[in-house]
Length: 456
Image 1 (cartoon, rainbow, N blue to C red):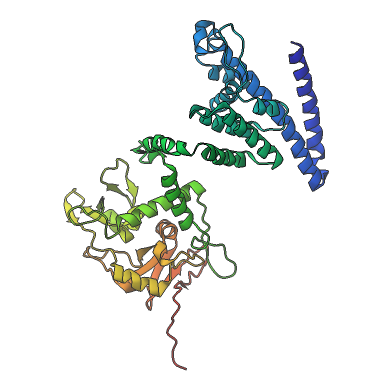
Image 2: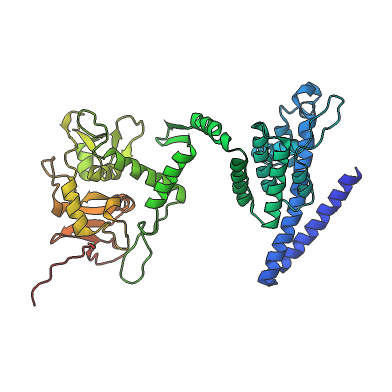
């Protein structure tokens, strides 16, 4: 109980110190702020060491062989994780992490009830001294444990532990850097372990997608390192500042702020990658056609740009703006219905621009035509400047002088916003909404490098 009283006194003193720090931080120099942060981190490391130690004790006292006499079950909790979470208010994930590390740092329980030697004494010592963070300690213990499980001798495991602790402290490594160093050392000491570890990862790879009641598709995935590398490299390439847009601009140019979160950008990028792959020449065909989205909509709603469309396989409808966007550049077969539900027309995906037409548009537009966007032609979709709908629908016009290149973001934005896009003398022009330009003066948007100039 004396220890408990001492800790409460320390906690009280820390509250006073924290209050004083908050009151004076604004007036400190940069160096003083950094020093203050380092001091609090040192205190935090000591506190987390105590959290790990006490959680490890709870784990030992709650071990399965004790049955109902174990600490967690005697306190009416089904697991030590739930007991620790109840006492501390921390998340179950954090509590499990503390329990795992705390138990791994303790020696095995002997038959007489005593405790054997600590398996990782160096980590335990520097953790208790507050010079090693708990995240770095967990990384070292985990990888040293892998070496032990692989049958490496105790001397090799001990050498790995000492090397990683020394490297972390002497080189002032962050927890992430310690994790990478531990992985590297593990591979050096156990090069034969890579194959069995990879076999486990290969068996764990998965991708599940289900449709929720609200129409959204949700899922989870687990990728092997090489699969994750392909995904990450592809996403980074498509989102690179060298090719991504839009940029913020000044003056008379118009730009649309990209308000998407990073997670939303990732979803759009992966969808774009899949759409491109689906349209590749060497992709499998069904009845001679690439993957086609079948949309059902009434002719009246399509012509008036209202209502909803229904996509085969989806329980939730999509708005008219989404149907119009899909019809521009995606292989969509639209079935149109009359007022009485009769089928008026069952379209086929023949209104898409051909590869030759897209090459001509790339030469003319140079990429996404939206002002300030620098997406190249390979990242763009083809939009029908004048809607692909005529009085005697179909087929509408799929001509070069009616096509415009837009990146996916601006293509979607155009269909859902008051901005309009028209063709004037073979050049795409954007018409801004009245709140941007009361006169709604058309803005030429092409980025073509060759412009015909009248003779002098």
